Image 1: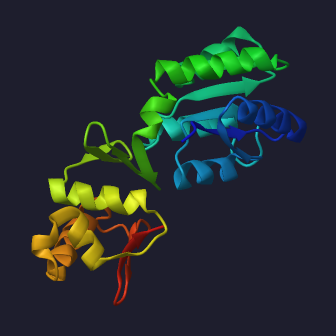
Image 2 (image 1 turned 120 degrees about the horizontal axis):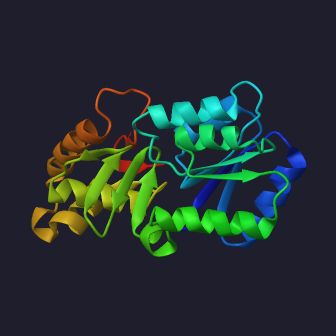
Image 3 (image 1 turned 180 degrees about the horizontal axis):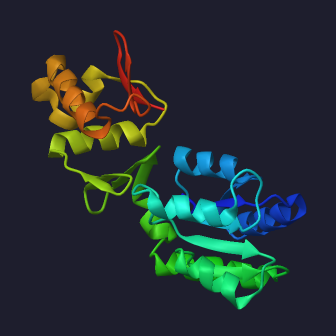
Length: 229
């Protein structure tokens, strides 16, 4: 898995240049051309880093930064501000509001790539760590630490619940039958006791979805089993 970077900037030629060079350097890149679209994309699929222009339509970059830092589930996202504003007071304002770095336009691509790498390294975001993290929506599963986070809130799961979630995420998009889940997680001694799976899925759903109808991760495929898209 590659580190995900979201570029939010309304200058198309700059976005295309940055996107090309980031992808060439091994990053996964998404783009947005205004603040509102960028904010919705952050909420939909939390990136590992945001490159955020100061002057944006609909929601300004500085207001976007305030929203990111004020929301618990988003507050830890690294943000690098991109701007033509080069006054020291502007830079200080951005940094005081929580920007991790500040690059003034025009900038060299080499400098941008170096700063991106530096910020990700500061947050300990690298390929090895990312490869051991499974994600869907706002849910992050750390395979090495056996930890699950919904946004920034830790979700306490039993061992079987963790293994169920891990297996579903490792097979994202595939329907896994109850008997398959039984065999993989409980072993052949439980074969045929599909109610065991249903009970654990119910408890798992309650913990990772709660009462939020907008976050339904696990789908029931009637008569077959379960899947996560």
